[in-house]
Length: 197
Image (cartoon, rainbow, N blue to C red; front, side, top):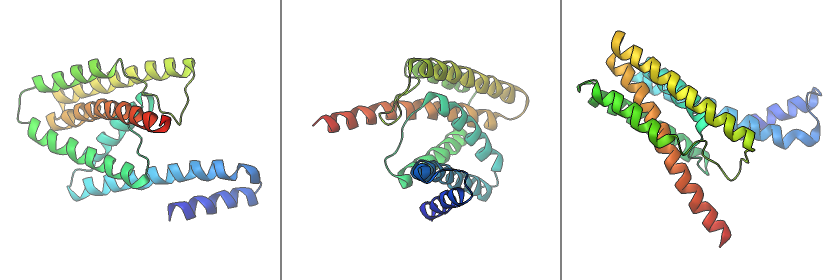
């Protein structure tokens, strides 16, 4: 369905002279990525709606996606694995936040600090299909750190003035970025070894 829709949109762009025919494959690929993200985000919001916690879905998506854009991480080879990874990550964040909200505030701060300390030397996670220049690496690293700190600060404010569970959603979402960065590095190393053989 997504492939058909992206192909149709690319054909429409060609027909309306928005793009040239030889650019179709690039646009089709980009549209497919965008449409797959929309489907995945919609599923996360629907699941959070079924739990009567749409705000958890929004908090997770905003925190996780903004920070991950700059930090990088695991990229699945297949769309369904990517979607499944996102859904498992979201459900894990919600379940862990439910368990941790009963604890004191200290685990919140530990999660934020330890995740950042582990993430710092890893970002941005390089992917073999996306070459980054030194300038891009420096920019992504800086923006990733800033985004992480901004969301951490928001989490601290939410923890102290609004809702402990919402704060834990943010903290655990940030730690999920760290975990997927580690997984991304390990998977990329394995893929590179397979390509060399």
